[in-house]
Image (tube, helix red, strand yellow):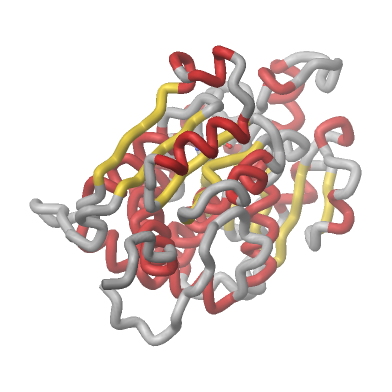
Length: 319
Ligand code: NCD
């Protein structure tokens, strides 16, 4: 699918930072076309035939990893996913040596998730292929923000002028960072709602308004995006208890009523039902977009893979 007018020219997708409105709209438009393909019985486009996609997940993932695998396969790429538990990283090889080793296998695209912010960028400097950040520490998760935008745009149309609340554990969330950046570029009004202990120190400079009172923060919101409480990243006393967190920051019908009537509900998953979101709200028939987000994830990753494969330098010598 190559006939769109705008030429996306980035070599890597390390974050939303560095993209402009045209880059984002190009990926969303292409994503829309892949949604159509993915709803057909035969879901094949051979755009990446003969190319190799290497998924390198140093950090846990279920949906993002399988989403990239499916996206790569539907485009006809040879997809290899490295199991980090059995990898040489566990045997003491440094991150950079791993990158050099994998680079020698000549992949065309490398999808990387790592627990440290900045690790994906570091690796991108050591390899010749295109690199996609599938989440680095609490820094960025650009394909999540893109799939969220695609989900919102398909339901509500233009994102400009919408009021979007991002609620919960903002401190540990790469999803929040990427979403604030992307929604700002597209002209939405973004609100971050979190207890003070889970609000990052620099959040005031992100281009979002900050709220500690969820009911106030939700007023007039078109979209309510909930975040997972990332207890595995908490080494100190951030919260009295999960029960108390739900009382103040869990999305239930009563708090949701503070948002615009019919406001949409989102969550990147995995969800902690009863901790950041009430089960009935998560499963709301018309208003919850949570499974649609997963569907959009495959489509947007196909769009990203297509664009980066086209921008990747050709490794074969000229004839
Ligand atoms: C998110 C992540 O890993 O950053 N999940 C995802 O990619 N779908 C959010 C999370 O883990 O809470």
